[in-house]
Structures are given as structure tokens and as C-alpha cells.
Amino acid sequence: MRALLKVALGIIAAVGGFLDIGDLVFNTQAGALYRYDLIWAVVAGTVGIAVYAEMCGRVAAVTQRPVFDAIRMRMGFGIGLAALLASTLVNVLTVAAELGGLAIVLELLFDAPFSMFVVVAAIALALIVALLPFGGIERLFGYGGLMLLVVVATAVHQGPDWGEVAHGFVPSFSGSPLYLYFVLGVFAAALMPYEVHFYSSGAVEEGWTAENLRENRLNAIVGYGLGGIMAVALVVVSGYLFHPVGVDPNDLGTVALPAQGAFGEAGLLLALGGILFCVGGAAIDSSFAASYNLAQFLGWEWGKYRGPERAPRFTASWLVFLLLALLIVESGVNPVEITEYSVVFSVVALPLTYLPILLVAGDRSFMGEHANGRFSSTLGWGYFAVIVVLAIAAIPLLLATNGGGG
Image (cartoon, rainbow, N blue to C red):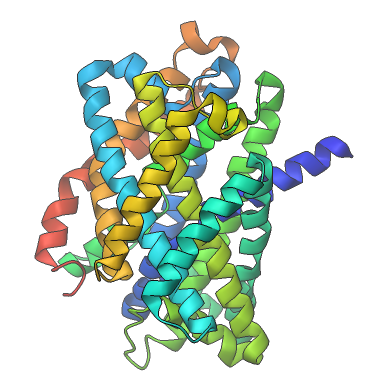
């Protein structure tokens, strides 16, 4: 029973770092613009992150090496440095977007200026990290993020044409740059680099060994699968409610409104609470990921479990990244715009993140009997080919659509 509880908690914790502001924004906008036509891209992204999360968790459990150690080891100093710079830029932008998202939700819940809530959110995150152990942080935001299941209930309550919804699971393609931009956006939002950086380093933080491989597999499949169900529900709800009337949900608060229509004030509060915990969890995950990468590349002591005394530079870097994000948001840039740019720029960095995972996870001299089998290898390399294509297309699509503005 104790082992089963540990697995269950790990699965729930996976939710808090998956459904972040990028998923909330892109999936809601995709539904508003294309109704159910992009559900297949959400599913594809969810399967992709589950595949790579399982690989990097397995590598970490068997070798005690997180993703960035693998990048430095297999790709060399030059490419490792390029990966570090690219991932740090994306991670800082992601932290800024998540921090801005927290402030937006707090502004909706309480009557006070947005800029004040940015500072409040940053201080609250710092205190949570200082007071809670690593597992406690995961579970707090994982459990809290489950409030967003109200979006799934809202989708069912609306009673859409389920035949049309099912049709959205079948891939469809269009030559429209805007359509392709949102395919890229909803796919990439599920595969943000910070997710595997945090997941693999977190496996080391929690002392995983080869005995935890079943737990790792369940976390990847069921945890990310649950996040994927919520992401699909966002598309369905938005497609049902916003698409017919031509509403452009370009504000994070709009994501929560359908729940109010379905379940009144309780639904609204559940949706806002779920967004708060999902975005807050992603803010911590992405800021930790940036610090993990820097510390692992430079050979510093790292890890929440070591504490500030044994890993002072890791702790200082996490706080610096949070401060940089705060300054970006306080400059007046729209958090939703930051989100879109962070997701698109992350696509460019994806090959540098996922290629080392594939190389190490498939290396039998390194992984022994736990190396990728034929199925995992085929699936991983297939996704990597898609990632390379998207990385090449990302910036042209960003410019062609004016950042999704058409």
C-alpha cells in the first residue's frame, strides 16, 4: 500500500509541471480559431513528452545523471554551451510568463494592482521553496492543479457533438501559416525543455534507482496523460463556446470563464485555483530547471535536498532567475506575449535537448539492460524527426503570422 501511494503521489505531481501557461494559452486560442481541428496536435505533443520523460527518468534512475549531464557528456563543451545558453533564455522567459500568469489570476481574485501581485507571487514562490521539501513542493502544486479538472467537467457539461470532437483526433493539415503556427504552438507547449530538465533532475533529487523504473513509467504515462486530458478539454471547451461567436481568448482569465457558465461561482473559483497551482508549479519547475542546467554544466553542487549551505550557488542562481523574470514582467510586457515567444523559441532549442536523451537512453554500454528497446527507439527517433522540422519552421512561422496575430 505504501508503494502504491508513492506511485499515486508521483503521478499527481506530474500534473503540476505539465499544464503551464503555454498550454493554457495555445490550447484555448487553438479551440477558438479552429474548433476541434487541432486536438490531434495536443495528443501528439502529450505522447511526445511522455516518451521523452520516461527516457530521461530512466536514464536518471539507472545512471544518476540528469539530462544536462548527458548533454555535456555526449555532445561536448561547445554544443553543451549552446544548449545551456538557449535553454537558459527559454527558461527565464518561461518563468516570466508563469510569474505574470500568477499575477493575472491574483488580480482577478483580489482587487489590487497587477504590478504588486507580480512581487507578491515571486515572494510567495521563494517562501514555498524555502519552507517545503522537494516532494512537498511537487505534491502541493500537483494536488492543487487537479482543480483544473473542472475544465473536463465543463466540456462534458456543454454536451458538444462528440462525433465532431472525435474527428479532431484525426490529423488534418492546411497550408495556412496561421494554422501551422498553432500546430507548432500546441505541440511545442507540451514539450517545453524545462519539463525534462526538471523531471530528470528531480529523479536524482528523490534518489531514484533502477527499482523506481515502474514508478517512472507510470508517472510518464498516467501523469502526463492526465495533463493531456485537461489540455484536450481546453480545446473542446474553447471550440464549443468561443469559436461559434468569434471570441479571441487572448487573456488568461478568459480560460476560466466557461467553468463559471457551467457551474457558477464555484466553477470559476475551481478553474482559477487550478490555473494558479498549475502556473505556480511551472514557475518553480522552470526556474529550478535553469538552475539545474547551470550548476550541472559548471560542476557546482546542486539540489534542493542539499540546502543553501551545501549548494549556495544553486540556490543563488534560482533566486537570480526568479528576479530576472520579475523584472521582465514589471517592464510592462504582456505575459501572454512572453508565453508565445518562449514557446516558439523553445522549439528551436528542442533538438539540443532531446537528441542527447535519445543517444544515452539507447546506449547499451551505458544503460545495459535498461536501454531503449525497438519500440521506444523507433518512437523517440520519429518524434525527433518531427522536432527538427518544427525547429526549422518555428521562426519563419512566427514572422509570417506576426506571432499568431494572422
